[in-house]
Image 1 (cartoon, rainbow, N blue to C red):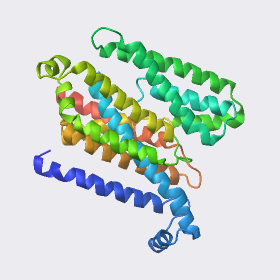
Image 2: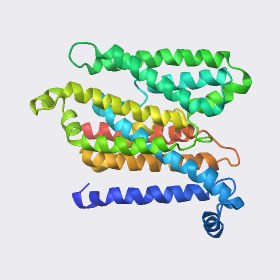
Image 3: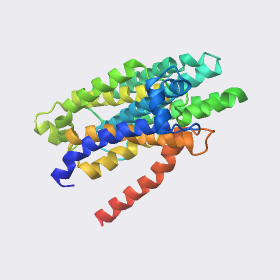
Image 4: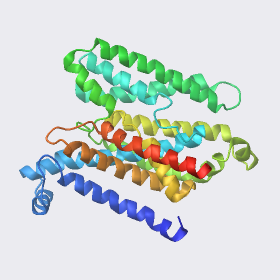
Length: 327
């Protein structure tokens, strides 16, 4: 894309993100027209105000924050592993979170404790992968990837065991959580602060990420301390993934598809790619969750089903474009 049109993409994505949140607050099994929506906005204690302020707006903003976290984490993972197929869940963070949350459901722990349990499980998985992959020798992306994949497989086996042992009343909730669900999502203040902080840190690393994406040898020749940088990138990506999974469960394809699309549109400069992917990730997940709430209303689908239905054909199109370009 030429430089001039590219400069308007980020402001446009910011406006579209705001518009998507407004749209999500109006649509649902009980649709609010413009007059009713404006009245609900001004009168939080009215029935429409309760619907807007306590249900739809918190859910829409939570969806935006989760989508932004997953997209940013996907950008970092793809640089870390130098693999365009890397996504936020590849190193087992979501597996640890899922096991801890489902274990709480199996033991009858209150639903309000599920976010804390999933965060603890994600942190445990980060510590396990970091401890096993770090070693004493030089950095090895292959060792990190293998450690993460094996750890994820172990968590998956434990999750399957919990599903097999679960009762009929708990398995449905478990499956919804595993597919990614925003029905009971609430937006804790710490998640917004964490997103803002990690966005600023990641944006400050944009130049180093550009160099790192050209290879470790090139980065070292240009004066980058690659070992410390790579572990920092891993930590940032893992924290973003852990926070996203804590809020909404495992939502697939956002962290895989969004960086690809923005890289095609904006180029590979992370000074532009990171803000664009963050904004579009939030926008994409808000619209996907709106579809999940409305397509079979009054029933609601897990948002992970919608992102998969949209992400699979889109990813195949991207692969076909890459094949044609290589040919």
